[in-house]
Image (cartoon, rainbow, N blue to C red):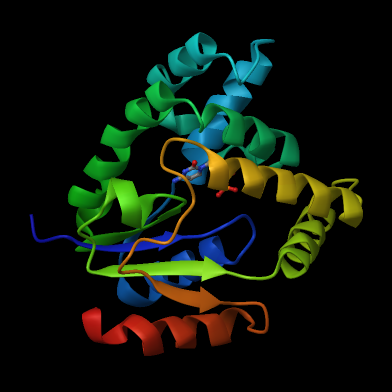
Length: 213
Ligand code: C5P
């Protein structure tokens, strides 16, 4: 089909989600936060009392994932993020979640003319021929502070130094895994949001990739 895809990748709390949502709103595109698929998979293993690093349990959870759970606020916790990055390193899990993501990009819901997908491997694996690929990043300290404020504002009892530590561990796991590691696609444009607020990040994205939209 002629659906356009905007691929946004990058490490945790770099501002991908906010940017993806604003781009989708500005352009009338559908939006898929692919991290939620991994979070829902990891969380469902935890809920069943299982170990997210166990390939059989994780694959079973991914294959039976009900996309209605994607809106569950519990998926935002760092525990769900940690479980997500464990199931995400298992090839059968990534394989099970691939078809849904590609289908969303190819045939976006509600007749949208395209979709914005954000994650870790959208430009490199899920939608390698996307005409627009952004790799959104920011310093680890900036990212930890953003995640801290977000979780605190959501009423969670969190410690910033602990978040920085957990986030570095999760980034290391995502970057070093054998399958679909977190790396910018060769043709991705890198956008560092450390010193940008959400409006500035949206303007920068348009400046960098607007001619391809
Ligand atoms: O983006 P978010 O922090 O919600 O993602 C949670 C975890 O899911 C990431 O740390 C990563 O391990 C995994 N993930 C992935 N590929 C994606 C999206 C998320 O491996 N496309």
